[in-house]
Amino acid sequence: MRYQFDSIAVVGDISQQEARAYAERAPKGCTLVKVETDGEWVNLTYCDRVPFERIRRVTGYLSSVARWNNGKVAELRDRVKHPVK
Image (cartoon, rainbow, N blue to C red):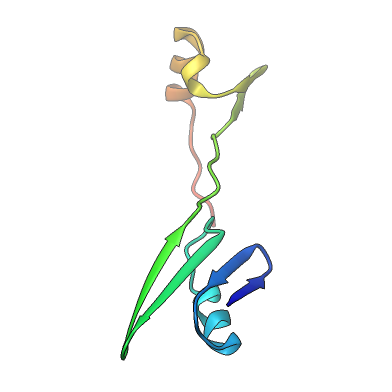
């Protein structure tokens, strides 16, 4: 059976209540949970993580750090980072 909860699909021969519990415990970014039952054991496979690229904006550039020149990389390294509360 296949159950859909928000953006997470759960596939396996399980009840809807059990599928919902596995979907709630899925890692962040996971879009699919495969459930295989083997007697009393349950094998979970979390897959299809949504890939993302971190984009930073520092003084006019909006792109990945890999594409920055040496001056912008130095500017990023020298920035004061404040803790998040």
